[in-house]
Image (cartoon, rainbow, N blue to C red):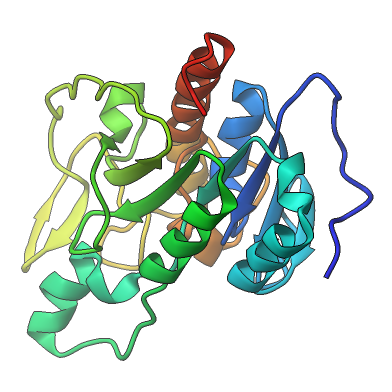
Length: 241
């Protein structure tokens, strides 16, 4: 397994490895922050807007470490599968007996990230995923039309937690048999007042994919743009490793 040779990049931009990249919600934010991106996912992602490698993310990272090609990168973002411990799975789905078995790749991902020697992020939804919640972000922090709280473990660097503005109301839709209207849409599932694809695109600021499954898994680019800018500000001051 070799490093891609067709990376579309600017020599002035540090290179970021985007593991479990899906359609590139995180990648777009990092690009806006100042990175060039290589995304890796086991599923073909034709809508991914940057250099893409179809591969097992952990095997690919292990190969980069073994060959020394990991040294071409400055930073790693990872969003490993952990559906079994997200809030929806351990809450409503579990109580109703819905869903099935889910893989949890957080621990093996962290092990390889530590072995890489690079600063990194592990991103997870709210729930019981076993990560440090060094920073958590919410759509209201960026005036978005979703709440979509996400937690971030920061490896080999740190930054301050931003203030969390008060939510302006409910997430639109049915919950426990009650319908509520509100300023936010639910970017997951379908029916019951959940967001349409165009509503999800608008609410999260993602325009390059109209695939519902990709949108439901994405984080808004505003989140990773904030994280990427925070890291770059530190690294330019010689703070980050």
